[in-house]
Amino acid sequence: MNRRTLLSSSAALAAAMVTGPLAPVAAARPGVPRPTGARPGREEPVRFRLPAPNGPYPLGTVALHLADTARPDPWVPSRPCRELMVSVWYPARGGAARPTAPWMPPAAADRYLGLLGLPPGRVRLGGTHGHEGAPVGGPPGPLPVVLYSPGSDASRSFGTGIVEDLAGHGFLVVTVDHTYDAAVVAFPGGRVETNPLGGVGDYAKALEVRTADIRFVLDRLAVLASGGHPGVCRTPLPTGLRGALDLRRVGMLGHSLGGATTAATMLTDGRIIAGASLDGGAAGPVVDAGLDRPFLVVDTLGKGGMDSNPALRAFWSHLRGWRLRLTVRGAAHQSFGDDVLILPLLAPLLGRSPSDLEEDVGTIPGHRAQAFQRAYPRAFFDLHLRGRGRLLDGPSPAFPEVAHAR
Image (cartoon, rainbow, N blue to C red; front, side, top):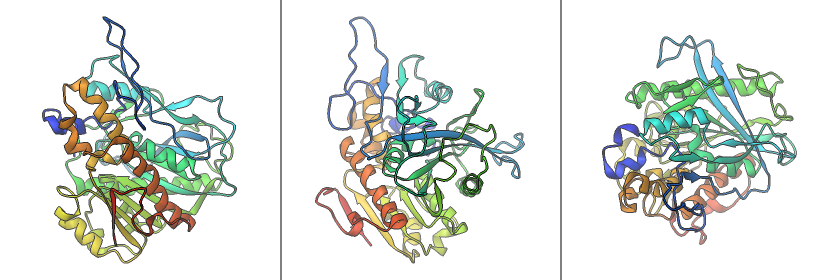
């Protein structure tokens, strides 16, 4: 879905905003920041910061600029090679004095907010909980690796809540911006690339490009694990990062088109041993070929879910390995990322009521959606990359809104 072209419709308007961490005044409740309070006669800027993760380890992160010199850019032929930005998230030690990374790089955030038509200074984007360049910590030994692919016209920033949870519990997570498919991507030196078409129209091509992106990222992670530098600009690498990757235990997670990317990539690359799709579809050869490795489908009920998506039903029927379908009562398409906290808080800026947002974030309370995000992806990767955990065995009284189907 192209978010920016939806700005003219009321319910879909919020979906157009899911790529920016924009949180205005909100009542205090679990998972929602407190209002900052406006001074009389002056409009205070809207501010957002994700709630703190609850893992046992502090977080570190580093952004890397990658270039695939063997591949011209498929979206913009004038670019001599395919360039990507990725962020590596990991459990850290001793990095409290280091600055935390922004939710979205400032240059990208400024460009994106301008694309949405929000006035300068009206929105202030918060930081993450990842300390830039902190030494790697966490449990002993190399860490299982999880790749994250966002939805179309989105950004690697939008899964930050899920990613922080995984890293805080001992996973090394690599988030990927698919350049010219993503709404905005900031490169070193201040260059910002946007989506030249304002969205993804050719989904078959997008899946092909994204699959090649992920396979290239895996190749560069192998270079990193063998002692080399994976990036273009030779960004200083955090202490311990080279020895922190266990590339025998690689999983992948994606939202929307990122979920379809997960399935498509697994068909062509056996290095990914477990995949999860957060309300994503299925397309291409994997629909009929299926997969023989663990796959988690997180789905919404009704419009857009498996019940109304023949390709997704066919893909599900051809899964030959461990499989599980989870449906979340009250959830909608944008309930599976940071959007579910952001969009209800953004609505006043857009002159929209909370009811306008139900098509996009559903009726599930934001803190319950966040609790799902923090529990179920980690339970899946704990089970299939670490061989532990029981949450996925069946319904849990702690999550009455979640239904299981095998």
